[in-house]
Length: 607
Figure: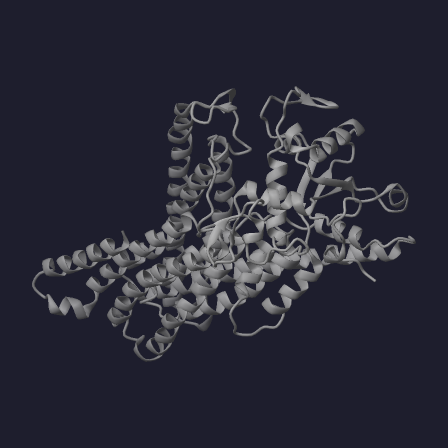
């Protein structure tokens, strides 16, 4: 009978393993012993007071290949005290939401001294991660056995171990039994149904659940656009100028859906307790470095780095680099237009069916180049933002997202704006929008889901063959699970997923009035995206650590900014239409005033 994580007891001799720490193969024994003692030591002695043991005992190490893998867990009392330390908010018996405290634990709904389900597994793993990350150096000057790995009081031990190559990775384990139940209600049966958002939150945490909740909401919000766009495309499209009604609907739609989402998001996070969760004073991010000193606000010893040096790096290096990349993006765009002129001239000269197909080739090539440039720029933006040495993780994320969004917006939409307002060629705008949207969706599905899934399946087959070949008198179920999961790819967060939705929102809200099928294609893509992303989370990547979230963060502002831009764009497209120009044949002053009035009213509603 296979042993799952759910079936293991929580005694100290055989605790429930929640987190895996992988050490390098050549780590010295004194280092292992020091790390173990720091993890299991009491909090008052500077330890994490967690449970810690090697994956394999001495007998098993002789039978199976020793991978230097260690399991971390915690007793029930330790978990409850950790929940209080991180400020988890839970529902009380009187239906109010309050921060959990161990002293008043009996006042919380669902709590029982004999019940181990009060904290979700995701919350337990988050608590362990928090405790490991807050292991700080005391009087040590270096990591035992590694004199080159310097330490100073207050330095994060886990960060130093990772940067020194002593610790390879730290990751939470899947619970195969709970995962199978989640898969059965989530994506294994393809059907048009709501996702089990609360179950996703219980297994992966609030950040992942909010992403899937937003993906689901955004997909359903696209359906009215798709329903209106399909007959509009079939019966009105041949007259390229008759897009005023659809553009007007775009104005309302792009505003309303974001306001409704904010309300739904607040309802969810209040129910989960993260809306009221107090965030403690944000500590320096692990990658932040500087001269050790005393923080004048917290009075704690930590690295200090002058802000003027950071500003110099931003304005003298990062900003010019971003501008250079934007210039290069525009240069590539002009090459694309040269290819369009060449393909059109070739078609006009020959008029064959082959050359009519060739008309789409420049747009397809340009769409692929855009995806490649976006990915290459992402790596450069991450390097630059890390080099700027931001003290807080929130500041790091804000600067990274700003860099990436500015480049992606120009790279993806500059050609469409040029076609719409400089060339004023609605037929070419339709063709370019369709090609860019469909090509980007196909490439994202292949690169983000199909390829990683195929590679993971191949690795899984190799591991299973290796397990079957073992002539061992032991149950290697847990060993097999850990070996399989440690080789999985690491999920890097929801950044790329939100970015994909952000660009999709741009394609639909900015120019779908001239290509009404854009929303329909987005709906089809998102229905498959829900299932492919779910598969990716459950079977392709390691389980990510849970991270409490009260909303979708800076992405809400990004979508709202795109909504404002879409209002201006659709007003301008309306102003260019023959129907509106017929109303103001003599002067366009009245038309400009109307456009400004619409935009001002939108902005007032936005703020």
